[in-house]
Length: 120
Image 1 (cartoon, rainbow, N blue to C red):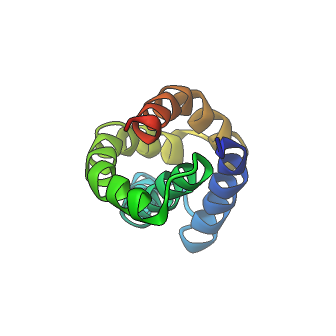
Image 2 (spheres, one colour; image 1 turned 135 degrees about the vertical axis):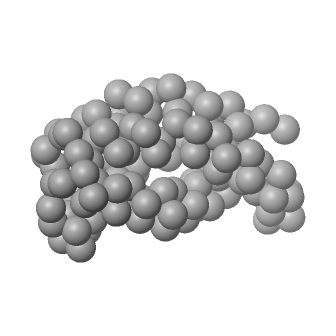
């Protein structure tokens, strides 16, 4: 699917976050996690799911229906996994290693998203 674009998008997002919130304290990590999960995650999922649907040949109508059905569950599932991962990532991991940490966890997450995106 379109996982090839995920790395550059997420890596760029981390650079933006570090410009907005340059520190590495616990409070800075919490702020970054809140921005990441409150702004980036919902938008990323909202783009990812219909893109995969389009690449799989769904009509606009079917793609919209699938997004309405799958998006809430995917976002809720996201919130079970990513806030804790990102909090640790933003607090403990230097910027140049964050993408690698996320990609390790993303193996599981992307398997879930692929299942969700390809489910009829």
